[in-house]
Length: 305
Image 1 (cartoon, one colour):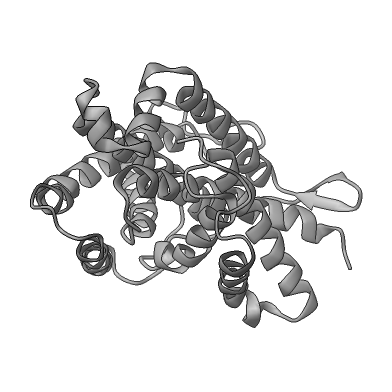
Image 2: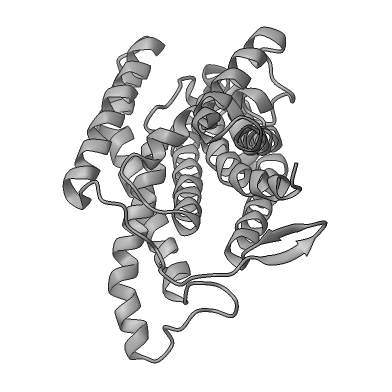
């Protein structure tokens, strides 16, 4: 078996792990499985693409639209990512305001909120397809040649950047959650929202912060996936099962666990493609999910949130 499968699995796992962090935070704080999270990945990618289309022409006119160093994109993409993340966050907060927040205030059962998220997911996907059509689109059309990275493995600069960005974001978020007052508030709300409110913690603010973090990471994960492959309205839906599998495998509420779970899922998919073929790749996350629920329902790590 070629060692290339390792780097391929790590690259896929980085995107899955980053997306799974937002999912595990949402579940830990809000206590429901958020099916719209996958669609936030797709919306983040498309919103970034839209901003990039406007910004790219402006930067090209200023003479700074060329690719950055060895990468396939110019400064327009990082700047567009910031704007895309902001727009994704706004979309998420609006959805929480008009849907999830209303259900929470009325004391709706968890299953009602889950079904509402499932319906919202379908609506978000349909609107996205209506606006942008089902045709795949690309954040960049620059071709890259994979370079040797050692031990018989090859990767493009964009792929290596994906792994590095994921590592930095996970480390930064872990420090925020474990070392800051906001992180302490999030952990308190995760343990007992009612008791946290009694002790003076602004529970609604913690919920908003959770949505902001989850939506921001979803946008970055969607852009990373689109940069390496392509953007489609169903890209988030296709990643939803691996995201859930990674979150559960790592342990719900654990940020490092979600990343590790994503890397394991990515490696498992890569090995499956090498051994039995690409047609079985979609079933790997489901198999891992079932095995985890049977053998170790709490996942690999305890909560950090």
